[in-house]
Image (tube, rainbow, N blue to C red):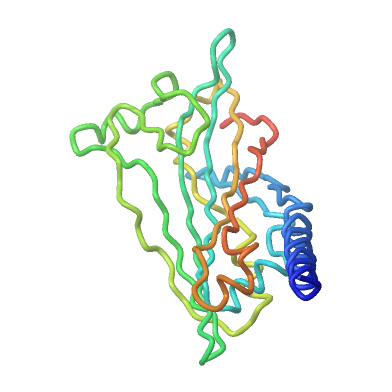
Length: 232
């Protein structure tokens, strides 16, 4: 009985340590910061940074060989007096990293998903779609009339051995193209909404036992809002 109690006590201490590690990894929640908008004719661009997203825990997961994905949701919103603000445009950027343990290099891939104009509405695409967007702030795709849902497009794929380059690539949105300025209303006020979803797949043996507290790593930031701006 004494040996059994010691074993049970040891298991309890082990589980408590893992739970403490898990709670510690979630203690510092990541967030979106430094949202800036640039109006460089003929396009509207946005930049932002993810703070606190690359923790020692996620670095450990990546170096175990498990893929990790940072997904960014970007929305161009238009103020409407007396009405719910409308979503003029939405874009999803998914960045995935997988570490090759043998070659000791990071394989990076980026997918971008956004609504595209339907063939019979290209002329109307030059006009404002400001009042016809579907409302809401969920992750489901928001489409305007005259658009069709596009499949994710592989935009970028590369390999690096530099951990700092990896961190910068995962956490920085730099000059992301939104829409042509001619598709905005010069007399309206706009703002950008951005949030991020950080995930990794379930780890495999033996990591699913050694690091089970991070094998379900799934963190979502709050929506962050840019300063209001006009398109003119």
